[in-house]
Length: 444
Ligand code: PMP
Image (cartoon, rainbow, N blue to C red; front, side, top):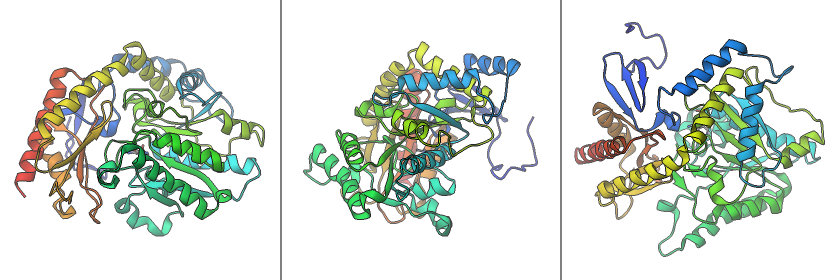
């Protein structure tokens, strides 16, 4: 049934009535190939039977019991699963569930703060993050985000967070600078900032292992995170890995950080955890952090009503089982290589594509006005938005990000197809995206 009256604040969009594999279908019958999983959410496509059945089964026995009084089986099973597969060094970690990536970031920041207070270092309150970056929309998570446009209207409400440069190779790596030197120079910005603030005042450093929404699927240069780990350890600073977008298999390993050979003290995850079947996020604390809490007050200083929701955790557990039972991490690596090859073949020499970057099934094309100078198109042209609309008209959905008004980043389109994508779907995504970029850049 289609509704004439649109009462939601985002109601001026087509009404989606059904999901079918990689496709979304609207009330007029139009089919959209979902090439971005919304925002790297729908990793299993839109009609996974195993997840749907697991959710329905759980509702037959238990939906909700407050975490202030109880735990439940699906919540514990999922926590076991995540901790058992966490990057080496996490140890006997523990998990807390939340409803969104932003809430997970809030919880991670509070957990970091609790860790230091419990250990008798209450002066440690400074957070260092990177720019560009995006870590969520609630006030503390937005404060952590190095995203000028999203911060601007709320600036007076934000908390004071320090930012260093993200390891954004296309724009920040110098000519003739080796990858190792670039990695070291960028990571050493953390050392310098910690020294400037006084190591005894710094609580945590926040960074995505592979960047998503703010600058588009940017993996770190080799060695960067090893050095970050060393610097954090040397100064007693916690490393919070934001795996909300890049985690849960998206880059070809369950946790993106696994590929960097280090572990985080606190990890956030969301989107791919419920894969769109349930709104669920999680924070995992390593043994080191858990130990400080258990050896201190013994209580978590954070809580929400719907934590450990039995239906949400049962749904997420079914998503994790699908990934493992069907060996979907191998599929991510295989189809990711096909996506990369297709994008490079069609766009690498394009006059307005400056960079193609990514990992696994997580890829971005950065669009620029001029390849030689890397000058972005004027933001007022909204090129990324135009590419999205052209692709959407042609029946493919991508995730666009506008360039920065200060010219430090170009428009880009992010692709995050589902892990079950067929060869034909990957090829169609490349074809439609390349045509949309072609058409829209040639119109300007
Ligand atoms: N962290 C990262 C890395 C994200 O990409 C996002 C969402 N794009 C968030 C946090 C916030 O998640 P949510 O929108 O679920 O609040």
